[in-house]
Image (tube, helix red, strand yellow):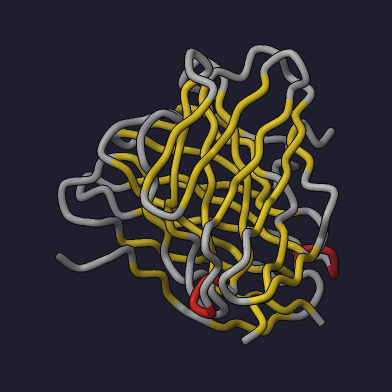
Length: 114
Length: 111
């Protein structure tokens, strides 16, 4: 069974630009969660989508947004990029929503903001 | 506010010995705890979990201990193997809500 895929794997942008990251979950998984990983901060929860609806949201500014499509694929968008947005963005899929369900992570998208 | 803390950023252990990773949390409502392992250039993978109604869960070489009164959990790896060299993340969930992760501990197993 194919794992979680994320595209692109690496991205370089400049301040003020916007970026869209994509995540394809494992077949049959309906929940997709997004995390930001930075050194010393671990994984910070961004949001979770289940059946095309945002179910949970972390403490990130409104510049961070996402959506989920009917095939469970998800996109995350960051507008007006700042230097501090440089991070590894991970998405994880699970069969059901919430923290009790085992999450399967993709390899991440490494975003560098110059 | 970091509700899950891993105060040791790194741990070095001899092959064959025990690795003990520690995790503290502040939210007494957390009722489910997990450990994830991450290799470079890969996403984290689930390792082991424990519900708050238990104080120990074992899976092969991996054992997780939970001390609710101290709001502390630990992961024991016995014996440690070179393939265990990775970053380990502790995570917790409250009432099936989102996962809160610690900052991670990098384990290096020396031959």
